[in-house]
Length: 274
Image 1 (tube, helix red, strand yellow):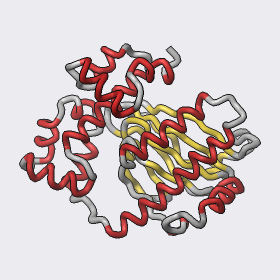
Image 2: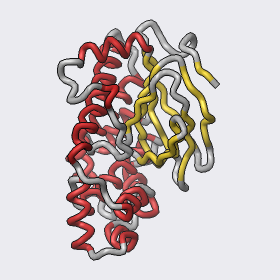
Image 3: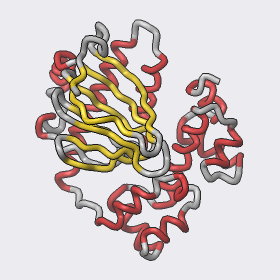
């Protein structure tokens, strides 16, 4: 199946949409005459890209060139959400030209790391994409370009960083992936230690080395991201907190505001349409 640009791209050369896949649901193998980058905004996706299989947890960023063949399916028991930006080949070349002097490595040399973006980078890009979904102003084209340039720069930066960074051991990659599931991050740090089969001290040392944060910080981040999904579905602040593993509502509000620079009720009002 080959998707054409005729009904996908506007005059700006871009199109954005969000797609949710239920557990067991898939999007069949396809290619397109345009380019695409997408951001995993929840759950875990299983991807086949040009014959290579990979699991993409929340926060993963992927670039698909024109005529690449890929398929996507929901992995695990939690729905998977991803945000697609379709970009014409001409538009992407222009964006690359604007970045050519600042990219850490040429984009053609990029190796796409199968690992989530750092939380700050992920949230910055996600916020721009969500704005694009609701945008109706003359600034839409500029915001598309800004988001795409940021995505391309992140891809190039991660390639540069990957050259010198040691790969996480298999057991740690599996723990990292499993802790994206609600059943595990709600259970918290004890579950993470249990899944690792290591001592808390060893887990903390290895996790900080390979992911740049402590296990406790990672669990908090997953709970906060889970809460955003609940709020986007229109759940109340109290419901979102409980469903994400927070027992103390005041602590939840404090952590949420520190992370997203807005209160949970403000986030719900802006992104749920409720």
